[in-house]
Image (cartoon, rainbow, N blue to C red; front, side, top):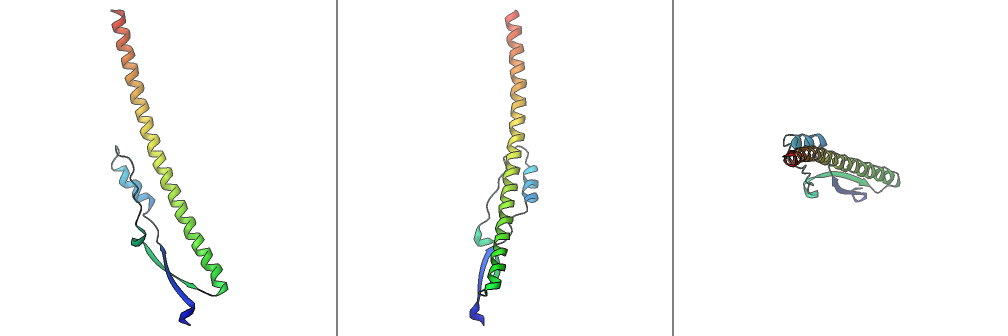
Length: 112
């Protein structure tokens, strides 16, 4: 019964998060660059049966894949926010020291 089977393609797993983080860690002064993978490049064939029992299994499989992709996106976003936090903290420290130096210079000039 070949007519009861439909073949479609779903996206395969995206790049491993650790690979992307490692590539960004090698470039400390650059913002993270997470490029989406084109859907045409990531095809994983999945066969769907038209039987009612396998419909539930297929729906569950699609939901599992969707949840996995959602967790990956969330982890990537969290990593990006952590990187931005690090950059902001470094900027804050730099600006605080610059302010202290300028205040000291102002005090010295005022005393003279």
